[in-house]
Image (cartoon, rainbow, N blue to C red; front, side):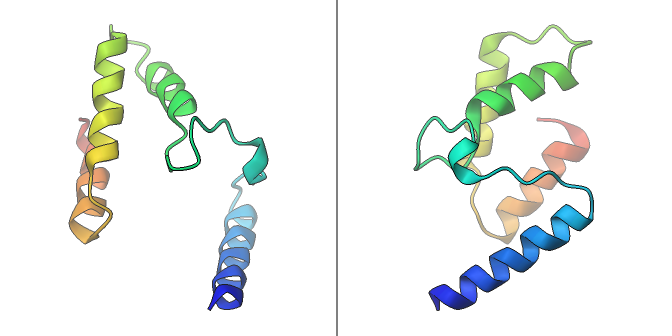
Length: 89
């Protein structure tokens, strides 16, 4: 099972690189915790960068991150996150 997972992971990484994504080795990621899948510091920085025309406070950004962290990792949760991208939080 582990070998199968690694093969799938490698194929996905290869396809994403071919599509123009940049791959970063896991040990070089700016992680706040091994248990946290989101790259919190990078996410906060990007939220502020993308929304530079709005006066977002640190509290606003933290609330967005908390919503993402609370979102379920099932089909409904995926839809919710896509809605955030389309319509905002």
